[in-house]
Amino acid sequence: MESLQEEIKAQLVKLESFKMEYANARLECNAADERANILASEVIGLEEKASEHLWLNLMVHQSHLIHSLSSLLLNKCS
Picture 1 (cartoon, helix red, strand yellow):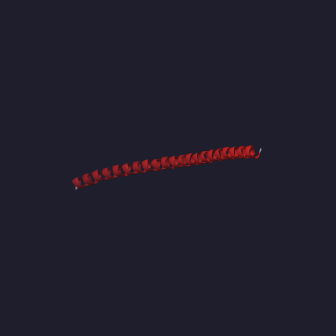
Picture 2 (picture 1 turned 45 degrees about the vertical axis):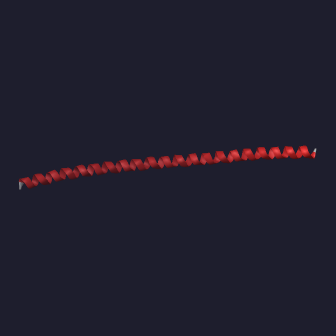
Picture 3 (picture 1 turned 120 degrees about the vertical axis):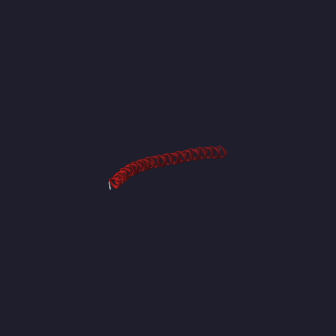
């Protein structure tokens, strides 16, 4: 009987250890999820900035083209 009680105690210690490992693993997963969400948010912000930058470059390029074409047309009409 005493041997059985010791075996039960040993199993309870193992179970408690497993519960602690599981809880730690969940905490690590939650922290990793939070970091992933932060990184995803940063990536979205960078994509938006890059898109705005490309759009502004396109507008500047179009403005230069319009200016060049206007100059050519004015020179031909003169």
